[in-house]
Length: 110
Length: 307
Length: 97
Image (cartoon, rainbow over all chains, first blue to last red):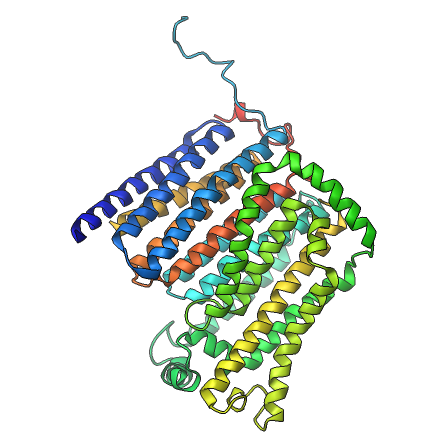
């Protein structure tokens, strides 16, 4: 039972770090602020949740579990609200999103 | 990078990096204080200052070449002076031979607290901490004497009601989530205050978290609403009360026959006396820090009428 | 596995700093700081377990709250007229890549 919990925790940690890395690559490679924010906002919350669940599975006792649960709940609430506030403020302050009207990379028309 | 706003963001990242370094060096209390003060409150207060001064840095009017040379020479001399000192962290350095072993060996018996940082800060070096609290109080008084809030009791009520209808439309999600989070932040500030004896924490960090909660409330719900919740007279009295409590503990120790800030004489048993003394002065520190941060923020943001 | 996750988070924090220095608009930098903050919360929690001292979780809780308050603070101040996004002084997003 202990090793099953430990292995599942390790798997969650691995998944979380992969998501984290993909968010990091996204913030560098995407062309526009809004696309970058999409990359960071989605992967940030999910990676944090995965890593915290992995830590909880590896240390399932007492006060430590409670504190990790508290951090998890707070991250799940706070991260999406911060992304929402950031996108709303950027839009209201006239930051225009990148629209794909100038380049048309193939598809049906030639 | 001439944009002051971007510079403030970089300073926030730098504060976070310092907090991570302290965590790596296993210094928990210092990391706690750096994370809450350096990366949180300092960024917010610098932002309020930048809204008063303007966003871009003035171009330099002269090139400070001579000053740079003087700084390099002085720095070189200082580094040459430190070559004589013992290496960083050796066991024979004087600080590790005389003072630190006494704290490490005797702290548990004399004060009864597991957290040695709190016992050194509050009991062995209590006089220094009194100086720190008075400095924070003086900073608050300086801000108050330079940027005074105007007295307009009826105006606050009208502004608060009108802002309520504005904010209701604009920031609905933020308002709801903030309303849910605020009780937990305040409760956590109290936990940090009283748990400082056993784990990382203490008066300074708790005061900063409490002030951050009030600042969050005032940013999301508007400054006049926050001023009605946290009355300006109350906040000034709280700042003064903290310093008074700290000094009062010292005076009571003197009246009971010991030295100034000697907690052994406060109760029948020296260890109980230490507990009581440390509890009271941490409370005083927390009160003053929270009140002064709130005073500084309210005064700065009232200047420009930023709602 | 804990150490691998810690290294991954350190790499991502470095990537975030690069975006914070390069990022043409102001909001890119705010985004970088926000990401750096949440990664710091994770880093502190992981380091606590790597070094065997779960007391660091208190710092992680405080840091999550402070990060939120800082981002909301920055956005609140960006609402005022001083911080209007100028389309001519900073490069627009289309010319960037």
